[in-house]
Image (tube, rainbow, N blue to C red; front, top):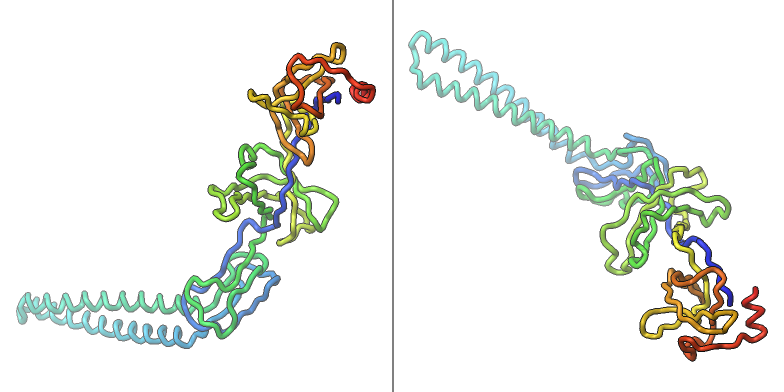
Length: 328
């Protein structure tokens, strides 16, 4: 066959899924029994919206106890300051000793510290009571609920997952053999639910380590021009194009032969029928063909069958069908 050198491009496709760039797992900051869950999967929420609430009885009792302690500490401080002032007057008249005044002065300082501690405890109790209402940290859509009313939850346990409004991405897994230099590949995304149209994608993130089970790397491609047709969870296909800088020829894979000094092809001089071995390198394989580059030129005639029976400088005769194929 007569080969044709072409500067094509290597296209790769990978299946992925549309995800949001930021997803928050909203959780309570205190433990307790969940009283109500006010949202379901698919609901849109805004920042500050109540997602769920806890039973407030125990938290309210703690706050009332802290409030009572704060009132007692405040009264104790007033009493201690009054006693200190009284003993200061007696000290100025030399009725009491300096040691007695110091005792009451220290008691006043202790009362001040007790009041400050009680006020901080009251603030913490009020905060814990406020934490009984789970508020959305950002606007978005609910993608998952992990707890129901009546369930006892712990601090930090995920209750509702919210996908934040903003940039969408496509998450794909790339084999480790093809991860090298993938940053330079232009990328486009198509949706399975929308056959026409492509979206420009930009590589944003490459996982630093491969998955221990699948041995693939997780990549994130940003869809900065996504329209209303792109929705979370949709199946997408990422198309990567690697413009080849070196012209390649597509030949049948069976034409490749290795004499022990590297892979190559048998080229035939159309005039003399003399064979010469041309070393090549394989860019990629398809089902039955291979795209090769190396010691080849556009229009060269190569042997596509029986390569293992030939030798250097051997002369072959082109059959009529072969000559017509070479001419084509």
